[in-house]
Image (cartoon, rainbow, N blue to C red; front, top):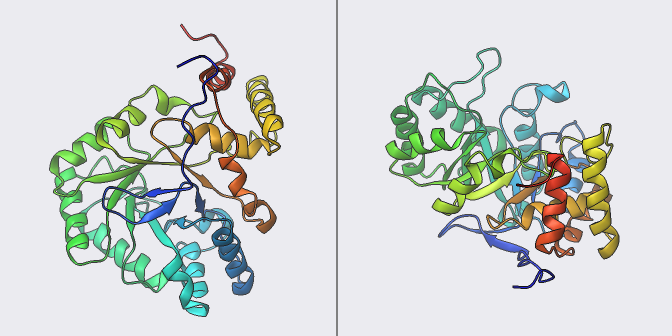
Length: 305
């Protein structure tokens, strides 16, 4: 391979996991999915579907950060699906649980069973394709957690299990006790959040063929509005690629994430239909090794060894 050869480009769709449903290679996240206007909420879901998105990521804790109750985002999605039931057949829905207001984490068997049932009830569903433990509970034995997830799977409530914000060793501990494969992990991963590249999370995903769902792919808004030297340096590197392909900095950031051999799926959080419509631009940029590493070096703030 020469220095100018482009890295393999991601396909617009891929299996969620081995034997699982096909999903878009970019997901739409519902952390900011809020409000009482069900028609407007349906329009946002429709905009994502029109942009080729089929994987929708939510969580039971989404709500309080928007000044709404626990479970509000799932409940709003449930109202959208009740208004337009045909949408459900076009969506692959993933949700998360295990965060409890004021606790903060609970992965005991009893709580997980109740959390899964509550999520399904809020969304008006009998089954979700992927259910993820949102944050690791250090007080729950992984055997107990695995037992609860296997029971929900056996009952047909969840298609597969994943984790979010777990270290590689926490994933390994759960996997050692689980009769079900852990098919996905959800770390914070972006050109500004590069720890998964070196802390073992992405290496473990490659070793176990786990799907990586990258949350906050724009660095929590810091790439859109850089405020420090590091963010400015990364933005400049992304802008160079964006200019080459006539796309936004955000699209370049998403494509940088997808260029990694895990084929990580960025979770796009915008709630603006016009920006949702730009999601397909993420498939346009092509990266050479030199270009990709240039962004990484800008994020590190020092040369690679």
